[in-house]
Length: 176
Image 1 (cartoon, rainbow, N blue to C red):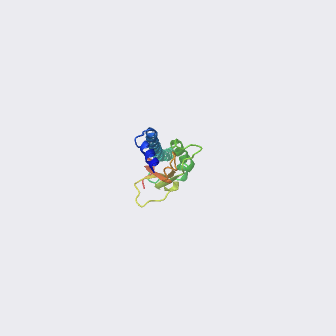
Image 2 (image 1 turned 90 degrees about the horizontal axis):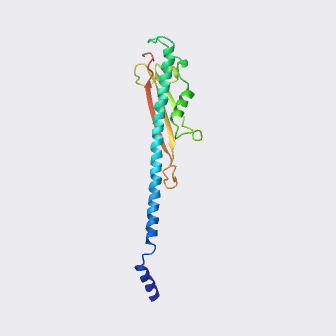
Image 3 (image 1 turned 45 degrees about the vertical axis):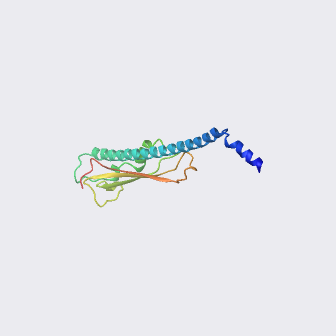
């Protein structure tokens, strides 16, 4: 029993190795904080990119439809919109894909968009919402899944669904 007391007394005032233990605790906290900052930054960048890409796709669709309608001559309230006046789904998706890169690329493709035409642009393949402003337009929406990239096992939050929607009027759409 006396040998144990002397042995413990020896370590009571010994500070060898304290710095190493403090360093281990500090570095662990620093790494966890760094991974947290990387994940939050990637989440914010992905959300921003999706919003920017949805705006670009809606702008592309509205401008292309307006150009096609305007190139057919004078637009009046009796002008009939046909599906030929509308940009294709793949063209609008390409506009979205180009604006969404990065963070999306050929190895990690951008999510598919949903296009909804409304008002007098209904023949483009949309549905008539309950309240429609005069004329017509397009709404682009997307939902994308995001997962942590830095140490995902340390942050088991699973998948977060990000979404964005943008509606624009088609400038030369006839009034309804």
